Amino acid sequence: MITCPACGHEVSADDRFCSMCGERLAGFETTTTMGALDDQTLTNELSSEDIAAIDALPAGSALLMVLKGPGAGGRYLLRDDRVVAGRHPDSGIFLDDITVSRSHVGFTRDQGSFLAEDLGSLNGTYVNRELLKAPVLLRNGDEVQIGKYRMIFFLGSATGTQ
Image 1: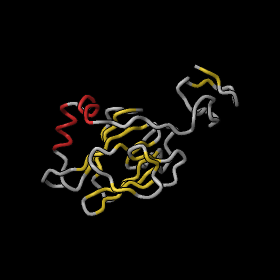
Image 2: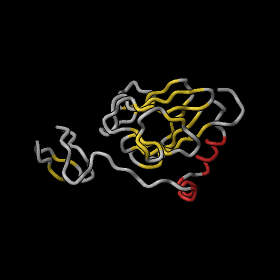
Image 3: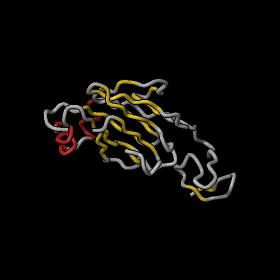
Image 4: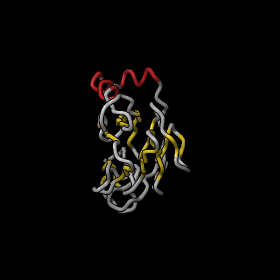
């Protein structure tokens, strides 16, 4: 544990901001990027259950899988026309971490595909390590970073009901 220089609150050495006063802690940049995931990394990271879930996704839906960060191993199904991810408890995808804005990013279904759009978040949204400045069409295997959450996007292609 370390002490916040602004308010004296004890914080974890891994924290970038003080959870009490919001002060940026020394030694950390406000935004970091992580290395891209290649096919070998994905093969090592995904379990047989993950692969089965991806293969069973119905057409018109998508899946975000958390590979790194809080909630690693979590899965979020995108099946509505519009899903907002953020720290607000009523978000379609609730991400409970200070690095995530209350309404951080929106995922919109468009003719069977999904667009990601940053909703004015403080830390930005990254797709394939690129800061979103405009809505972007997501493709299978795209890496989506929302605060500390590092996710992989998979678009459904199996036949079935939504």
